[in-house]
Length: 138
Image 1: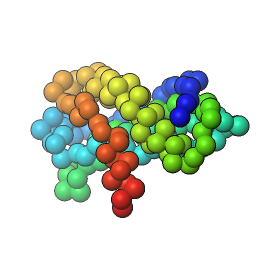
Image 2: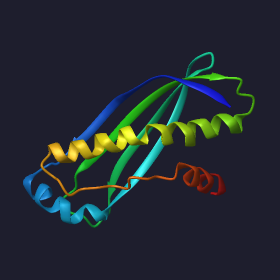
Image 3: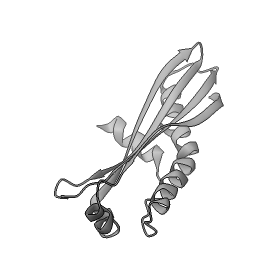
């Protein structure tokens, strides 16, 4: 199972605190947001694929004032000697997100700090292997 990361970059960031009321309540209500990941891949050319790892904060439905935070981080990889679909799935859904998550995490924290919110945090460790296994069992 071999691959090489050719490039990685932020494809898109959506970060919106729509008003002062949302801003003032955010540090207290951040626990009402859930961290979600969406991982997508698409072929670019022979043995080169694009992997989008999307981190999104989703508010609970009972929140009246909601902020938007979504970061799409793209990784372009070249594959070598991948023989099985299962092998490719594990690279795309576990190994690449696991590798780039520290970049996503730092970007996320930076956005909140630059917005004046110092006490907002998310899980520093995410178990992509566990998420992959849970998804396969659904």
